[in-house]
Amino acid sequence: MLQPDWKYLEAALLYEDAALKASTNGKNLFVYLRDELGAALDPHSHEQGGYNYPDVAYLLEQLEVGGSTVVGGFIWDPSLPQFQSWDRFRSPVAGEKFPAYTWRGDILIGAATPNHVNDPLVSGVWRPLDHEHFFDDAPDGNIVAVGGWHDQVAGVNELIARYADGTVAPSVMLTASWNILPSEINTPTGPADVDATVFAPIAALRDQGLVETTDFTTLVAKWQAEFGAVAGQYRP
Image (tube, rainbow, N blue to C red; front, side, top):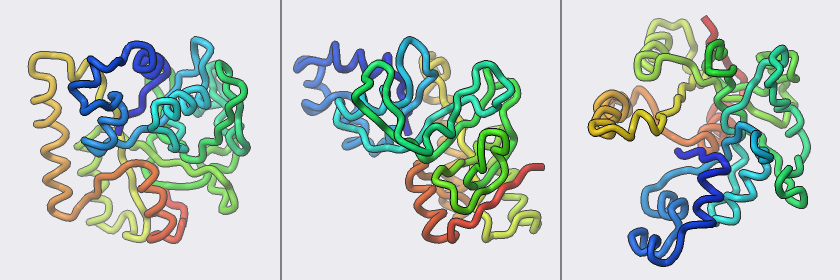
């Protein structure tokens, strides 16, 4: 999955020309990632520089890879001055840079705090009641939250253990996700390190039938179709 913010998208619109696209079968980078490499693309916004989430969704549409309703990464805690009021997406929201465009995100992922110092420790899927009661499920709510959990591969193994020891019932969908940053990739050994410490161990767990790898849109669709959209959380 890839969740670009507005700067990358504006740069693609501004700088990608026929010469650059020659190495990607004539496609812009994001279409190439989606069509050739199977990447899912979601809006991600720090809502700075005059761009908000709808603006990022608009730019993705201009690059022919729009359509996702994932709200990628947001500050969830209303006690913080940087709080991004996620519940405004109960209805379509207009862009700041492109005010004629509206977008409604309905999948919240990556609930965070500034610098990730106090991110919530939760795995599972639910519909937050409101911004003051984020972890309470509202069965008739029109926004779904996906817990990010913690500790990357070690955290995934912890969730597997909670299924195995009966702490969590198999009818509850547990979730884990995390970001791989450019700084982790852009070193001489970065790609190999990521493969060895993330992709290979997760692939091994997948091949054992212990986890599924997916994107957030597909995850929520599976939760609705196969888990009956029954809310569940693991919060130790």
